[in-house]
Length: 415
Image (tube, rainbow, N blue to C red; front, side, top):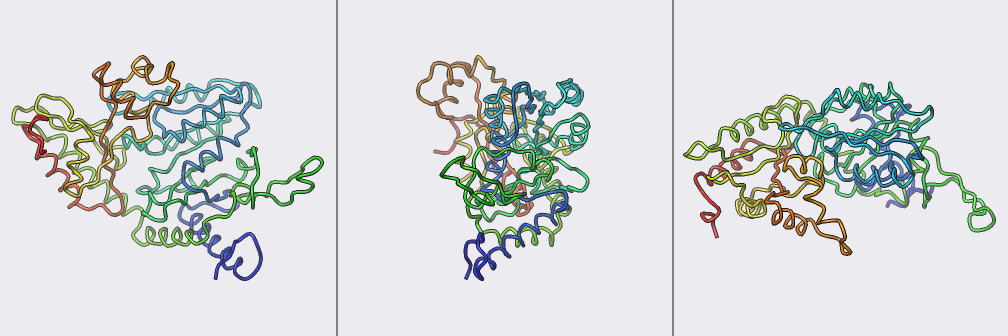
């Protein structure tokens, strides 16, 4: 029997043991010293990022620096920053590899600010759009110049080693289903204790406070619980968390370095096969967005399949046809609008009709159709991602699927 871990009866203590076992497994997997770090369990990586955004002590004149290449859950922190009067600055990526200019990053980090200014820098260790691996050395560089750092590792951690004894970002969001498929609905914020203490939560909930002295009378005092307890709202998923411990043990048994080597070998083969794929005329059949080699990139590949005239096939149609063969590919913008806008040359003017003067929110599909109809551009992409379960049969099956469109046009596609 297991009970709510916020109590001290036998069933609650049994649940607490499961929760803390999972927490210890996270510390061990990421080589994070419990004296330096806290592990806060959340619903997912997005919830971890929201904790940072809503609690970071932004104020007038403070700064939030982030990159075009970021998941929308990182972009969303800008709304908290702007509401507090902080300055928001984006660093662009460049074509064709969708990488950041390191000198530009260094220049922006070094831009002087007022003493005591709160400054938060956020970027992904691995792009969830292009697969680009951004330099982990930026963490130390930013710290040396007085910045706090959010290192988004949701796409990085499944196939790369993250050693938090060597790289010490202030905030690391994670989602465990991305690492080993289960459980869904459990993520984590790994945070440096010092950085976590500087956060200012805008509310409190069950389990996050030590005492609610006169909380509904008089001054309504409360004390936030120290460490992770002050950030785990309500009751954690104490029956799901054992799966985190089991999953991390499985990854450890396989070896994260072996997983990395395997997926990069598959990625190398797949990129080589794609870039050499052509129609009988010699026209390319594939356009890759991002690096076409494996140097400083991960096992995520964004691309178009091109017909014999060089026009991209409709990605939704390609997703449907791939599904008929039991192949799962992702289509859309992958919640990373910055990379998508650069990859597809989408300008603010192109997007204005989706936002300006709209009383009713425009869906992604509606906005995509507006941009396509008014500019001829297609802000939609295909993506394959390789992980612990991928093997050569998977990438070979995909290439066989892609090769089936040689010398075709949309009119030649199956009904």
